[in-house]
Length: 89
Image (tube, rainbow, N blue to C red; front, side, top):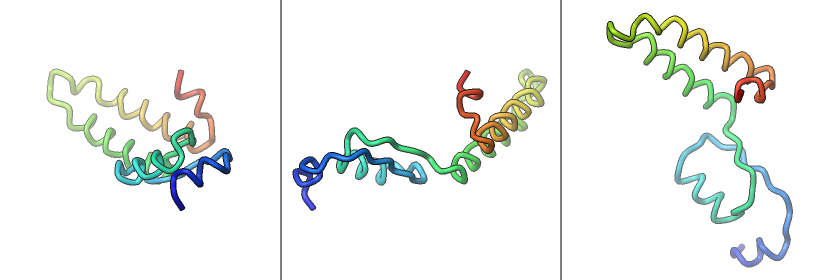
């Protein structure tokens, strides 16, 4: 289906993906005004990496590591329970 035919039938579309750039580019090409949602599994993977980075902070910053890890765990908890607005504030 060409891009023109997508435009002839305007519908609201939501794409759920893993956040890969190439997939997002394709989705944007197909529907520039669509909503893009990153699935929870891949959000959790990114939060886990951030927690590991926080735990490995060098000595001058290592005092902040427990608070950073706790904040990221809180983010994961709020997102799991659908409280996105809570974590965006």
